Length: 256
Image (cartoon, rainbow, N blue to C red; front, side):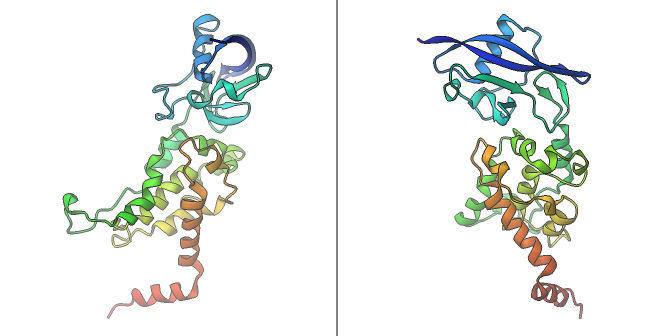
């Protein structure tokens, strides 16, 4: 087994402030960044705070920024870096620091609560739902989300403009709206909820300028921009600006 010493620069601090601290840590073949952070805890910095759980790329807990790129520490192999490279590990920049590599991501849970859930079709019991396979496949991709919030962190609308957070749900939750809007059994519209309108007017869909940075950092390789955000934008624009759709909606709302 090959062993070498790697240079790590890890952010240490809390809500009062902090900075980068340099460490030299042993690395073995096949290890990932989270392994090295654990070794650092065991040998040099026992009070280093880091959030993790499954170490299998499925819980989303160990999100951080590695050399400036949002990544999962458990899925970032040391072999992708050269041995003489200084590896910098910092907390997610878009969210407030709690301590060291742990950030307060409660913003995301607040946004999740703002999105109305699936509306069951009236008169159909849950066990009687029927869908074509092609209708299942479309939103199924979005169900792979592990809520690592890397897409939220890298989105410049959230990352660079704190003032936008109140009006912008972010790519993860706009994707959730798109998933529900594509669901053939979602009866939101019959219940008086226009998901396309609320995406635009209440969750900030218009702030997204489809740079695809959210797609680039997704560890599940969900095509967030191409398969969720762009189609949702197209449907929202049709609903709001297409004169034929507008006329159809007006006629459809006429009462006898």
